Image 1 (cartoon, helix red, strand yellow):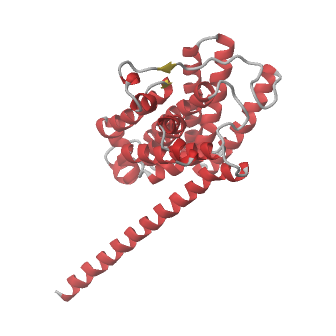
Image 2 (cartoon, rainbow, N blue to C red; image 1 turned 90 degrees about the horizontal axis):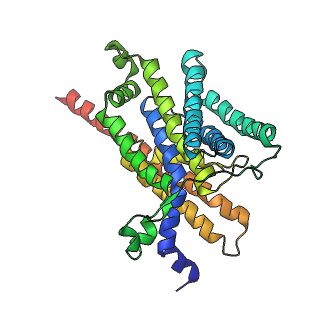
Image 3 (cartoon, rainbow, N blue to C red; image 1 turned 90 degrees about the vertical axis):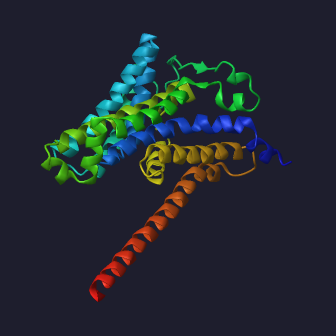
Length: 319
């Protein structure tokens, strides 16, 4: 069997998929929640970057993993709150405000890193803490399955719990009901006493909350340091995953899993004599292809609905 094919079909490749999927899934959940409220958060790149930086900095100076986690999450929530302030209070266009936040995050993290440590571009002089790996009893001893599922960073298992939490918030809580109501028809929601801006603010803050975990995983789980723009487009890929998943829990998970597999495949392709620039292009090319297929299918559905509506109208006229 071809060595590359043998590697792809191995249990280690399955392990790599979940490992690579983790930050995408956290961010995609955040994007989905904001979209359900009618205010899609495309500042996920900046949110993850700020949380990754804050987590490393706090862990290095306090030697406390819990404080680093709390600080990183607080930074993500703050990014969501800032975006909501600009969009809902100052009436700025949410797309422009989110892009500005992404650019701000890219610059401010490097600037603050230099002020704190003198490092330029990466936290090489800081000893960052890492979230622990978890080996699941009994399952770790099962051939193949144990290799795929057990031994991941605790944040990876947290990503699976986040999907469940996303479902509970969206479909089992009054807040989730209000978020969906505001996203589907804000005027109708407002007519029954729902404060639309407040619900959208909560949705954007929840979006930052989930996105923060993706950033923390990158700098304290995937690797043990912070580097300039280390998110490397994952925030944008997460937006594509949320869109492809229909902004629903199961769909978001499956789409994130798909993009995780593509990213893992790109890593395995690095062993071949293929230009590194082409390998780096694979995840983004897959994103464009997936969104093109999704858009084509959505366009067909809309066209079909229009045709059905015309047919119903014709039948009514003839009767």
